[in-house]
Every structure is written in structure tokens, then in C-alpha cells.
Amino acid sequence: MKLTLKIWRQKGPKDKGSFIDYPMNDVSPEMSMLECLDVLNESLIERGEEPVAFEHDCREGICGSCGFMINGIAHGPLPATTVCQLTMRHFKDGQELVIEPWRAAAFPQIKDLVVDRRAFDRIIASGGYVSVSTGNAPDGNTIPVGKEIADRAMDAAACIGCGACVAACPNAAAALFTGAKIAHLSVLPQGEVERDHRAVNMVAQMNTESFGGCTNIGECTGVCPKEIPLEVIATMNRDYIRGSWKKRDNEVKTIAPVVGWGAGSKL
Image (cartoon, rainbow, N blue to C red; front, side):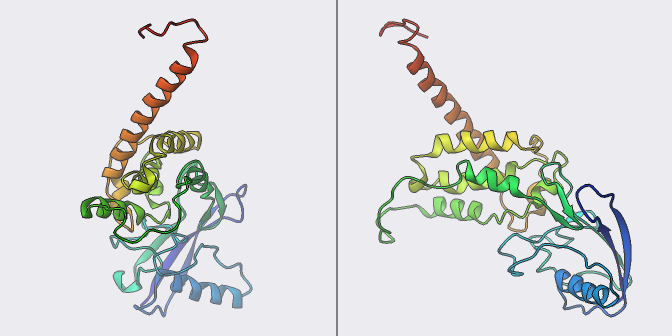
């Protein structure tokens, strides 16, 4: 196959970037997109040029490290597929592929196709875990979990944090990612204890980052390589509202004796 890769090149965060064309004349249809970039980089190194910087790790569609736009679509034209699993046979001979990084204020540019996605890490650190003691690992049937609930948890837990949802969203919102990380814990018994303040803390952290607001357009789930359902955003909103009201009630109960409200006073 013959292809032309039109790749965004940018030396650093403060440098001006531009697209550069790279003709490739011997592309195997069985190559993955990342393997195609590997071949390109080998030829660039042989010519003494700077290789294209891009992220990767497992190359099995699990880690979420890789990801960029191909002809305006996050991860490329094949649904439910990461760029490391996207093979070149899905493109036409002689086609031009425009390759550029995720474009979002919350994902600052680092170099070429690499962006800083640590905003996701900070959202997880704010509450995306179970910290209460659960003791030793119980037998599989000790805590009964219905199949419907287990399926919902597993669907949300499939999120790999690649950032495609943010890149595809016109508002650059992180609601699908945050909703998935909240939902997969909130529906299980182990996550129930911290359910309310988990949602409040994670949504608050999401709002302090440079993500936009969710307007339920649905582009996020359309490009998600793990097909995270849009319903996780509803779960996040519900838990956030409930947690916010409980937090408010607790604050009122704490303040009431200080301002002199009696035990029988009504708010």
C-alpha cells in the first residue's frame, strides 16, 4: 500500500507546530497504526531526522497510553478500536491520513502526538478508589451481587483512560471518563460506604481542571474504544446531587448549635 501520513510535528509546548507530509510506499495491510509509525521513525532515524513522538505501552488495547486523531476521528475510523489495534487494511491505497494529537486545554501539548493527561490522574486521586478496610479477600459468593449490577460495574470499569472522549467532545468535557470511574465503584457493595463523597470530590476535581461542561452530545461514547455507555454520566450526576445534599445537611447540623438554633428548630 501507498499512503501519505500528514503528521502534526511540534518540538515542545512553547514551540509552533505544523503538519508535515510523509509519503510511505510499502505499507503492509497487516501493520497496526503504531507499527506504521515505527517503520516511519526507522526511516527518519536513518536519514538523521527527529522521529515522531507518540505514546504507547501494551499495544493490546488495554493500557490506554496510545491515542490520537486520524482524519478528525479519535482512534481512527473503526469503532471500538484503539490506534494500536487499528490495522492499515482499513484504509485505501493512496489515501492521505491526517494525524494529530488530542486537542483539549486540559491536555497540554508536550511533543508531536504526545499530550499531558495527568488531569485524569488527579481526578482518580481525588476519590476513584475504595479506602475502607475490606479485610481479606472473601469467597466469590460471600457478597451476593446480581448479574445486572455486575454487568453495569464491568461495563464502566472497562474505561482505559485514553482521553478519546475528551478529544471528541465539542466542549472537551471529561464527564464520560469521570462517570465511568465513579459508576464502576458506586454500584457495588464495596464502594457504597464512600459513594457520596467520592462523587462530590471527583466532580469537584474535574471542575477545577480545564475540562468543559457536558451537554450530552454523545460524541464521547461514539469514539470510546471500550464503548462506555452514556448512562455512566447519569450515575455520576445522581451520586453528585445526592452527595452534595448530604454534605450540605451535615454542614447545617454542625453549624446549628453555634448560631443558637434549638433542638426543635426547623430549617
